Amino acid sequence: MSKLAFGPLIFFAIAFALSLYFTFAAVQGDFGLFRRAEILAEAADLRAQLEAARTEVAQMENLTRRLSDNYLDLDLLDERARHVLGMVRADEIVIR
Image (cartoon, rainbow, N blue to C red):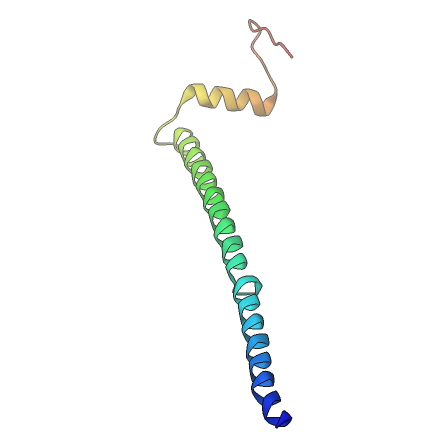
């Protein structure tokens, strides 16, 4: 009769252990809830980086257009030439 009493006990012990394992895997496993939260946070960070890159590209496109043959911004050309060549006009004062 003692053999009959251990059968259900072993069954429920194994079932409980498996349910603990699957619960742990669902929360902290490679595809668990914590990993999902990490992925969502990383995706938000990458979206912010993408938006910053798009803004920088738009600024570069604007500068490129302003220095193109079709539309020449003389003030921008003057500023870039001074910056690259490191020169100033005789009537300017340089403060460093």
